[in-house]
Image (cartoon, rainbow, N blue to C red; front, side, top):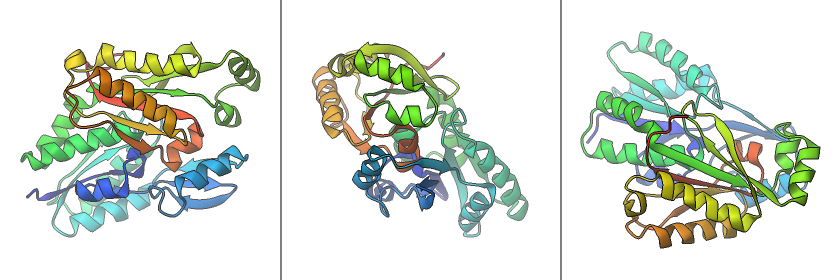
Length: 295
C-alpha cells in the first residue's frame, strides 16, 4: 500500500464514485451562477442537468480557482497524518491553480519538513485530466513511489490527447471568447469548431467543421491519427460532455467500432461546473493516450 496520497482538483471531471473507487482525493473549485457561490463538487449539490438548464435560460456564470490558503489547509491534513503527497493540477494554460498549489506546497514544507509534496501541472483538463489521474492510480498501485510517480507524470502527460467540439456557441459569446456576429455566422453555416489542447495546456481552435455529423466523424479521425498504436490502441478512452449525451454516445459508438482492442468501453462523464461555466451546453470532448503533443 502506498504511503502517500494521490490528489487532484474537481476539474478532472470524473464521478465522485470513480474517485473513491480509485482512492484519488480531490479539492473543489468554486463557481458562481447568477452571483450565488457554489462548490464544483461533481454535481452533488447542483445536478448537472439543472446547472446546464440554467445556462440555457441565460444564467450568468463565472468561476474561482482554489486559492493558496485552501491548498495549505488541504495539503496539511494529509501531511499531519505522516503521508507524502502527489497533487496534480488543472492545466496552467487555462488556470492559475498550479501556481497557487506550488506556493502552498512551499508553505506546508516549512511546517512539515520531513514530508514530500510533489505538485504536477497536468497540462490537461476535464476527463483528459481525469484519465491522467486514473492512469496515475494504476502506476501507484503497481508500486511506484511518490517521487517516481511524479516523474512518470511529468514524462508522460503530453501523451494524453484532448480533442473537443461545441455545437452551441452562446456561452462563448457571453464569455467574450467569440463575437456575436461570428456566432450568428457560424450558426447559419452550421459550423462546429474542433479544438484541442496544445503542449502548453492551452485550448487551440484547429478546424471549422460544417455540420455536427461531420465534426463527430472528424474527432474520431483525430484519434485514428494520434492514438498510441493507431487502430490497435488498447488503452482507455474517456469522453466528457455538457448536456448532450446523444452526441457523446455517437462519438463513443464510432470509437468502439474503430478501435476493437480498447481497454473496456468508452467512459462518458459530465463536464463539470467549472469547465462547463466556460463551454456551456453542447460540448463533447474525447481523450486518449497517443503521440506526444508538440504544438
